[in-house]
Amino acid sequence: MPPISWAFPLWDVVSDPEAVRSLGGRSAKGLLQFCDLVNDLQERSREVALRN
Image (tube, rainbow, N blue to C red; front, side, top):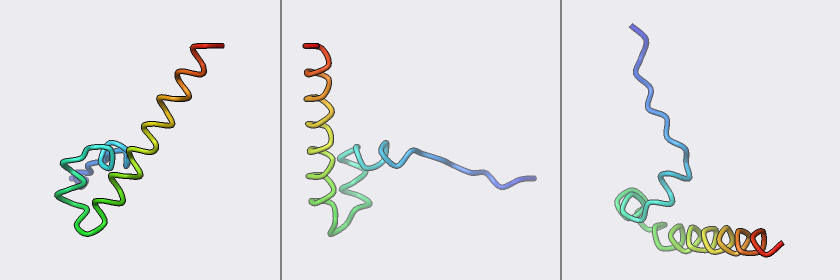
């Protein structure tokens, strides 16, 4: 029987604040700030795309 493999996209894990807090340890704060930055940039790019 082949081993069971659980594959999750990294972004699904790091963009979930609860997962980051429980798994991120001392790096959680920086990782959450990075995710906030990426989410903000994604939102801004959507807004620009809608204007054009």
